[in-house]
Image (tube, rainbow, N blue to C red; front, side):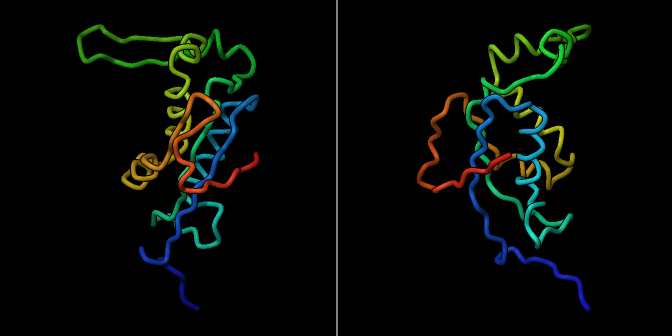
Length: 142
């Protein structure tokens, strides 16, 4: 019996919408990462890009459990000596909730070319409306 390897022409990409309202950030990110990688398909191959497009709506209404809003921090370096910046997730969720959700999903996909390619198919929207209605996305329930 031979191993099935999907070809580029055999891969069909679907569009999914995940509503993040009232759901924990980690659970939304896990589902989005699995859809982006294509792990929900029977033709999943770890070394091939066979994932789907994902739209996450209501990013500002995602929930961080416990004391994460006060204790969890996002760090980034500006490139100058001693300029390590930190932002609490409470502030980050008020100012840029799309970035926080994208960062959570990015942490759950591989750090290679397949992961970077999969992340280009992720769209995070602050409100309940998204501009991708022409693609006829299906709703994905958690």
